[in-house]
Amino acid sequence: MNKNNTQQTRREFIKKCLHILPLATLMPIVPVRSQSHQEYDPTEHDYGMGIDVNKCIGCGRCVQACKIENKVPKQSFYFRTWIERYIIPVEGETFVDSPDGGINGFEKKEIAETEILRTFFVPKLCNHCANPPCVQVCPVGATFTSRDGVVLMDNEYCIGCRYCIQACPYGARFLNPNTKTADKCNFCYHRIVKGLSPACVEVCPTQARVFGEILKKPTPLARFLRFNEVQVLKPDLNTDPKVYYANLDGEVR
Image 1 (cartoon, rainbow, N blue to C red):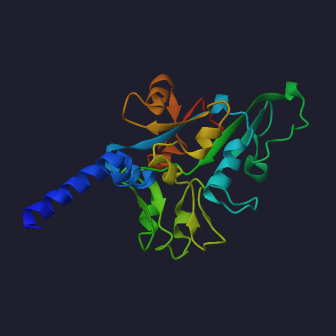
Image 2: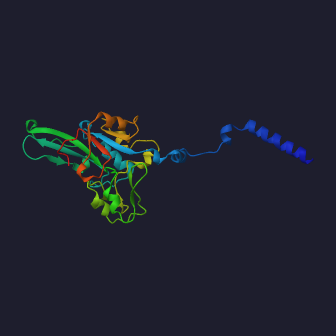
Image 3: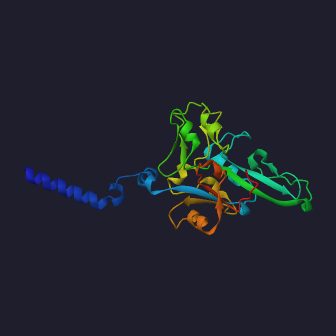
């Protein structure tokens, strides 16, 4: 058989294979996760969170979801997010409590309704400041601000010096007893790069938490900021927090 006949035979064989095999079997297999991760461009995003205090019922589902999603230690003093209850009496000082971070809800206080001026719940977490003091004090660069505006931790660099824990004015950081490194809320970064919401936002039954882009108008957070008069915690510190509260009482600290 000459060379031309051999090439023709090979071409005919390949053509027969193309007719027999489904097209999907000839296409490269690309994992969905890696493909979505490659498409994600952090420079196109600027994330923040809105919290409507009037909508929070103190159910603790957000705290539970955060613990499960991010493998936060089960002990009652380790939290990436927690809920505080404020009881403002007609006379006297404001009462604030957060039993087990509010993970199991709140028991009714034995106070007569006529003696209470107002009571409400305030979810708290890392404020992902645009001017974060925790980043400034880290001696090894383990805590940093990502290009999409999220303050993150790199456990491989963290030496557990606790400087960032002391520098945070919101008490949002803790030393993880399992990893021996600083830990805190990261907006469930592994979820948001896939286009998902943070776990706390997803499970909130009253939609008290809103997550999204700060500047892009179509997002839920942009609408939240447009239709509500919002405040941030401890604005006098000039940390420029990116967790915005609607209907925040002046007693909240």
